[in-house]
Length: 40
Image (tube, rainbow, N blue to C red; front, side, top):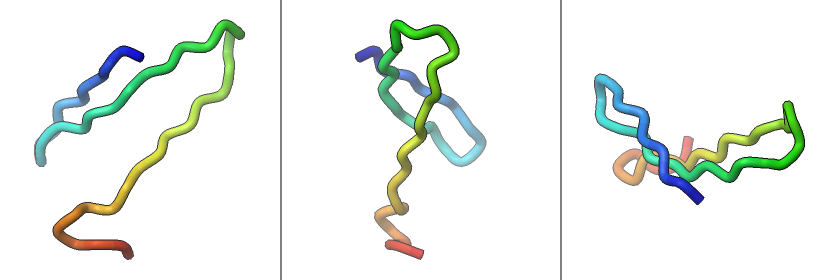
């Protein structure tokens, strides 16, 4: 899986991209809480 990085004003977001064979396949974004602030 290729790594993807999105630079932003507060730092970067890192992720992994898993391409699908099916055109227009749905996607999912999975996030976790910030380790300093915990869960909402």
